[in-house]
Length: 410
Image (cartoon, rainbow, N blue to C red; front, side):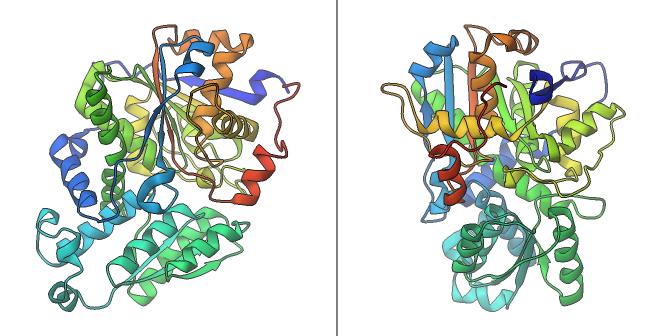
């Protein structure tokens, strides 16, 4: 397979053009971010996840810094998604109580008085695993119910982990986007509350809250770098499914740093590259990818962009990349087999996508043109975010131990 089939790149010529009108990032200003972060801090399970500096790898690959934010430690749930689900549920419940979320931290929200005021609520979502587990966990923590629909082909380990959180969970015979429609239809039919990390016309408030919840990740990163006396990253590699996570991180850095923000690279699998497709159409509108969306990057197997995330990524992201599954598999192997004193990171297929791309283009001579286009050089300080651990252990072993999805002769 030649490199053009392995990796496809589009540069955004408008990302740094301040003379054109762009979508507002007001929803990601620091005052909003701090509300989300403080709500997360109120949970007894909260702790800052590790920001790992891969010094030996940075030296070998010829850049100043490579950081990996390891979200496998998040709330004991092995993935970052709970940050969005918890904040959205918290915002929904505080609004129902006619209170600001800052007035209802976790301890107060689980009190008998608040539970009696709220009554019994059922939250519903569609998920490949991580988001649904987060929603189920939060609902259980707050004494509420959850219903979770999973797309066909979902891993049994992910199903079991959701079920353990007390959810009514089903693996459907639908792809992800159709599972979302099923969840939405049943929410209307049964009076459930939809907690979905994608947005469409008429459903944007809860997805925005989810995105604001995700910003706890980058807010922690900035705090950790300041504590170490480190400078801001020059580049951030962000994997995208519907674009909620990538849009949230992009929204944060655009709001806080403006033209001084890091260069951002958005990474997706070929078979579910809805952000890449939307960028390639070059008319500013979001476009869907149809079909089974088959990829090992289950968390990124989404065909329809989040409209909020897309608008942010359209206006502020610097590059969009679509790649083969082998890229993510490579990232998993490299992270799992560190050099010398570098720390090991256990990353899942979706979690390792951005890092896998970075490690490949830095190592292989044939990708020097991509490095030049992205302005990556020996001074670059690059942040990647491993959004999940090994959420499908069989898949992890097949890739890391048994060498599935090799990059040989590619």
